[in-house]
Amino acid sequence: MAGLADDREETETLRASLAEAEETLRAIRHGEIDALVVEGAAGNRIYTLQSAEVPYRNLVEQMQEGAVVLTGRGDILYANARFAALVGEPLESVVGSCIDRFVNASDRGDFETLMTAGSGRRRSRLIGSDSGAFEVSLSLTATGSTNGDRLTLIVTDLSELLEANSNRDRAERNSRTKDEFLAMMAHELRTPLAAISSAVRVLDLTPAEGEGQPATRARDVIARQVGHISHLVGDLLDVERVVSGKVRLNRQPLDMAEAVGRAVGSFAGNPELDRYIDISTEPVWVDGDAVRLEQVLTNIIANAVKYTPPGGRIRVALRVDGGDAVLTVEDTGFGISPTLLPCIFDLYVQGARTLDDAQGGLGIGLTLVRRLVELHGGTIVASSEGEGHGSRFTVRLRQIPAAAESSAVSLAPERPAKLRRVLLIEDNEDARGMLQMVLELAGHVVYDAPDGVRGLELLETMRPDVGIIDINLPEMNGYQIAKRIRAEPYGGAMLLLALTGYGDTAYGKDSSDDGFDHHLVKPVDLNQLARLLNEGPDGSQAETHP
Image 1 (cartoon, rainbow, N blue to C red):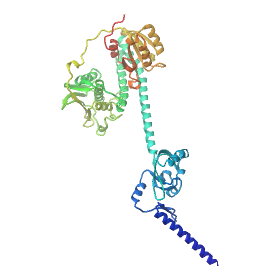
Image 2 (image 1 turned 120 degrees about the vertical axis):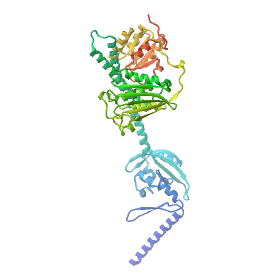
Image 3 (image 1 turned 60 degrees about the vertical axis):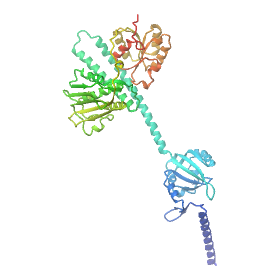
Image 4 (image 1 turned 120 degrees about the horizontal axis):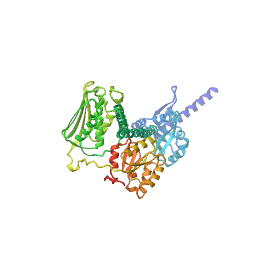
C-alpha cells in the first residue's frame, strides 16, 4: 500500500509540473514573459526569449542609460544590465522586484506622481547598494502590449555631469579668487612703490648741498628698480587679463616707425646698458593700440637685452613685406635650445640661463607679447640656431594706408605751469606725504586728508579746483567721494583724478562712470600728472588761480 501511495504522489507532482510548464508556454506565446530565470548548480541564470525584437533588445542592452519595463504597479518585468549596474545589484534580483525599493525615500512622492501620470520627466535620486543615493534623470513613457499597458523607464546617471559642473564652478571660483588676489597684491605693492617713486622725485627736485656722485647713483638705482618692479607687477596682471580675454584694445592708425624709435630710445638712453642696439626702420602704418604695441616692443627688446651679455649686439629692424609691417629683433646672445623653442611663448617658461638674478623675470613677458600681437590680428615667431647662436623674434602686423597729415599727433609747444589748489585724499601716510611734497615743490597748494570724511570737510572750506582721490579708502571709497563732489554746485568744474593700485579699472568700475576725469595707476607717472594739472577737465588749458 505504501508503494501505491508514493506512485500517486509522484503522479500528482508530475501533473503539477506539466500544468506549470503548459502555463509557461501559454505565457510565452502571449508575450507575457520576456525572460526566464533558471536555477542551477552554478547559480541563477537569466535567459531572454528569442524573437523579432532581438536587434532592439541588443540595442537596449548596450545602452549607456538604464532601461526598465514596469507594470502599472511598479513591478519590474525587465531591466537591462546598465540599470542593474547603477543600483549595484545582480540582474536576477532586480527583475521581479518593485521599482520603489530603488527610489530614495524623500523622492518617492514625486516618483509616484510620475507613475500616475504615465509619462514625463523627473530629476530624482536612486539608491545604490554600494554608492548610496545618486542623482538621475528619469524619462517615463507608456507602451501597449498584449497583456495590457506597460511603462518604460529610461534612467540617466547625472553623476558625471554634476561632477563636471561642480569642477567648472570650482574652477570659476578659483579664477575669481585668483583675480581678486592679484588685484589686491598689485594694490599692496603699488601703494608703497608710489611713495618711493614720489620720494625719488622729491630728491631730484631738492638736491642737498655737497651731494656727491654716490647719492646721485643711489637715487638712480632706486628709480630704476622701482620702475622694474612696477613693470613686473603690470605684466603679471596684464598677462592674466589678456589670457582670459579681459583686455580691450584702443585701436587707431599708428606709425610703427615712431613706436619702434620710442621703444629703442628707452633702452639706448641707459648708460649702464652696455649693449649695442642698431635700429633701421621704414615708414609703415598699422591699426593698433599704441600703449599695447609699445608694451610688445618693450618686452621683446627687454628679452633681447636680458639674454645678451655685455658687449653684445641687438638689431631692431622694421620693414614692409607683402602688405605687412614686419619687425625683427635679433641678438647675439645665449640663443634658444631646440627643446625650449617650441614652448618659448608659454606661460612661466624662460631660458635656463640669465645674466644675473635681477634679470630673472617671471617668464610671462613673451606670453603677454604673443597674446597682444594675436589680438591685433598679427603673428610672432621665434627662431634660433641653438644655444650660443643668438635668437630672432619676428612680428607681422597688417599694414594700412598712412594716416592723413591732419590726423597725425603734433607736438604742441610746452604750456606754462599752472598753479592749482589740490585736494589730496590718500590713506597711506607715506604715499600721501611724498605726493604732497612733489606737488608743493611744483608750486601747487595742497590740502591733504587720510579719508573721505575729512576730505569732504576740506572741500567745503577750501574749495579746491582739483581732487586727487585714492579709490581704495576706508569707510567711504573714492567713487562715493567723487559722487558727493559732483553733487555740489561747484563740483562740476573740478578736475577729479582717481588713484588706484589695482591697475585695472574693470576690477571696480570705470572711473568715468563715477565722475572722474582720469584714472591714474600707482606709482603715478608724475610727468603725466603735471600735464593733467596744467589742463582743465575737458583738456583745455587751465586758468591760473588767484
